[in-house]
Length: 170
Image (tube, rainbow, N blue to C red; front, top):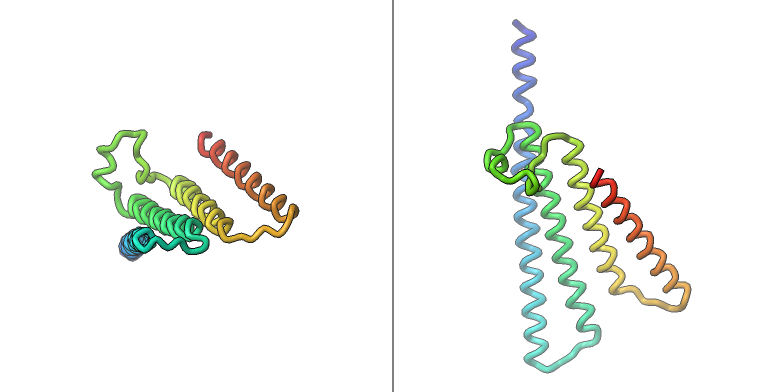
């Protein structure tokens, strides 16, 4: 009798993950809003610059960098969404609407912890790639050795993405 009560109580503690799901969704919403506000800010800055006919130094680099920063926020928001959906499906219940989706488009359908880990890891790698390119825009190159390091880092990044794609297909 005591064992059944304990096991029942222990089983119901899985609903604690609802906190992670709810706050993960709130975090994703915040990141989507902030990323969108950043894009709006870039649009306003660009329009204002065009109207005043001013062309500040590094105008293009600033615009591209700020847009890439917003894309970075969107990707992190996607990580939060995948995490929230995955944890909910793993611990609480499959999401009914995702069952209606075609098998090839079940991006948010998670059935194992390994699937959740793989999907989150791939998006995190993309966040790192986007962040890398954002930082590259602001890098000062002071010679051939700096350019060689840049070329090697792009090559390493490309090779890593290639192998990440190969692992995902197996």
